[in-house]
Length: 392
Image 1 (cartoon, rainbow, N blue to C red):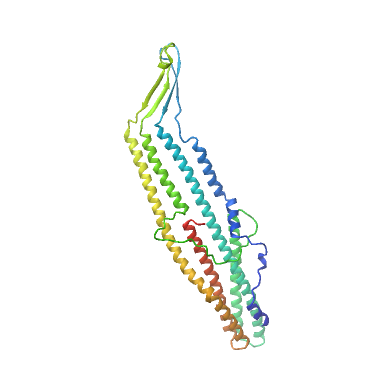
Image 2 (cartoon, rainbow, N blue to C red):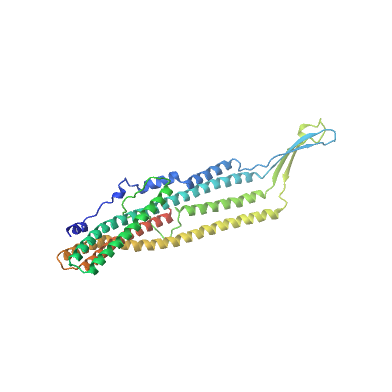
């Protein structure tokens, strides 16, 4: 019985996780370094930069071999040039595409950070439960052994012995499940980080890094998805200007030898205009580009609406879990220790029977488990809020 009482006031160390813990920041750095998605985003940026050189998109010259007099062949060259603004707008459009791909890379990086932080938190949570259940398992194993001896000596009845065994079995089952969760979490984190080393997390602590929230004025300026939608608006706006420029006349220049061999060189040049005669098709493209711009604006507004709803939900969850966490840290945990201490003292002096003692222990350790649950939920909610606001 003395060993049981000692267990109630001490926490055993988890030998299975003896290696140096991997910090959250180290996990993030490893994930960013080894991310195939991030490398792919970098290649998209490089591809768009390479396309910038061809953005002006000059048309190929026409080289013509002809016989103007039927007596000899001459070579002529014709080059059609668009309105100068077209080339400027095409180059600007490609630059806007580069900016878009850079902003999309930020989304990828932001998502990786959020996913790593969330998985890391789950691992912290699972490992915390393992430590708690390991302690309880060792405690209940000793209680079960003690109850068996007392039952054989006739000091307790069969119900008390069976109840102790069932409680011990329940804790062992929870411990096995938590260990399985840890293994799963480690494998998931290894995949995300691109490493094969075994991983153990640091002890879970209350997260206090929360971005300020202003629901009245929040336009999510830091959220990378909004930045992408805004950049899409800029691209579509530039596309309108490009289509308008394409509706302007083009220039045709050329060199033709359609005269005699002794025709002066200055009489062999041609110059003309490419007339946008079919205005209907140009107007249609301009209207389509304008519709695309309006569509991009509405998609931005829709994304802001979705983010606002998610942020409202996350804020509500935060207040709920913060209140629960405050309770456990100011009262709940202290009360659970007092319950354990009092129940142990009463049981030791014979003022509490076996069944009441076990039920009291179970209730006290349930409070500890709920504290870990509240801590995990609180921290995850903060991660959600910071992710929605774009502050990773």
